[in-house]
Length: 434
Image (cartoon, rainbow, N blue to C red; front, side):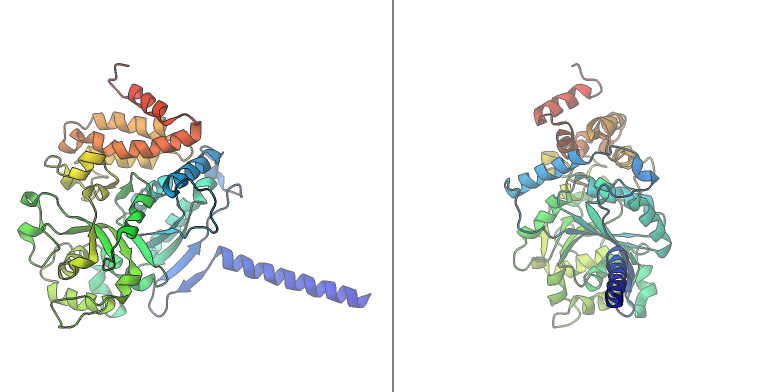
């Protein structure tokens, strides 16, 4: 009898320690990425239906409509097949947040998660005092939304020998994006976006540009300007830049495996340099001639290596410059805006009320509510009050692709057909005669 009791006790001890080990692996890890690398904390996705805090009790609590949206969009993207042998790898989305950028970054993440089809892995680089705010906010989101992504928090980190110089370049922490290929060593590809980005289409559509890369391309960005007569780089830059009008790095798609292995041509040495060998000499040579910091360095790099860059249309990085002097983004005029970039602080002042209206509508939208009457309707009303500005005159471009994205969610939520949604939307427009 004693033998059985001892065996039972031993099994119990093993079970307890095994459970503790699994729990520690799944729910928290706090490690350093080698030497002076950034500290990071991985937070796994919450399982729908699991225990939630008080903040999760608001909004629509039945996630089935959202699951239908994901399934329908996945079928549309994948040829209608519902059967997959194994889960698809996630899309990696990186952002850097410093100073007063917490709420702005959360709104960007909200726009990405709201429409995306495949799972998202977020890489959030932020000053240490912002970490708790990110975790508290993201963990308060409803379970059916929280299950669509996981995220890792990173401290801001630069090479120790020149950390102060990199941190003060252009804006605090902005140059962190240059070091993503060296920090995220196990990540093959990633989308980097500035914190003032808003997705009006699924991230999946941007991610699909990776499949369009040829054998030499390793990054994709949009041009800084469409119209050379009002462009900045070709009129004022005191350094080399890409193409006719330069590139804007607010939205940057990267194949980081290729970036880490590439030897880049440059105007400092006769031989190619690796990414990690190139950055500091480039800064030392041009630091007195650059205005826009790390974006200027990227322009210099791709000026000497144009074959490495895929240029995507301006509708994927639409900024006030594309409408402040009149509409000058042809792809947006043809097919609407896919990504809105509110640089120059336009989400937080009254200089470009059309941009602020889109930001406020997404920020205030409660997860789970029907997005057509709760987000799109109020936004269209707000935009009609901005038509005294050039960007406000182009308000239809701001909602064309967003309306399609929200309509897809509405269809999944209500079961009505797409034509009915479009008809209802037209009747709800202010000033409609219907």
